[in-house]
Length: 243
Image 1 (cartoon, rainbow, N blue to C red):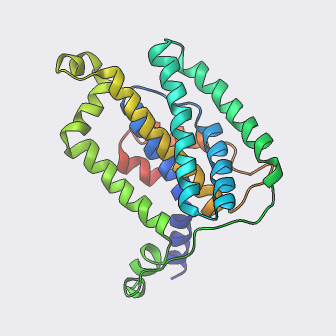
Image 2 (image 1 turned 60 degrees about the vertical axis):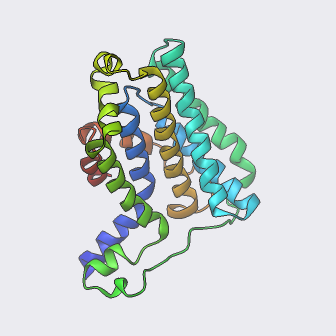
């Protein structure tokens, strides 16, 4: 039972980095590297908390985090795909900028209590031996993260658009020859990947580390997520296990 509690606690803390890893996996599969992850996670965590606090809505907070994460990713896409600037340099600049913006703009909200995702066990299923406390005694964000793993795997490996997504990064010339607008689709998937990263950032301040502070204590998480994507071989299941 102690092992079950340990695994359950690890699973409960995993959504932020898991969503960041899934988002970056999609982005890199499309041929774009978002090295702004570390700063993006900090900025989206701050924005999500402030919006949720001001609106008294967790949904609004998560939506704001996703929007900010997507916009940051679009800057990477625009700089690399349209302006032909180095992705690595752009990502480094953005991660530093986003980090500083998070702490400067979020300073008035440091240590202010705010909304938090509630614990939501699933009736009936929570009493299943071993699996119940691990999988079904969690909250809605953990449940969403588990569904997101399966959806990402199914989309990338079992659908025609997912196979085209893999071609964007691995064989863009072949994808173009088959009529795929490579640049447009890279923009689309970078936007989606950035939104997932933003959702992960929001999960920090609204679930795992509720509230905002300086320092927030998650610095370096983005670099860990990038490493997991690489060591996971850009495959959703392997990357999710690492997360």
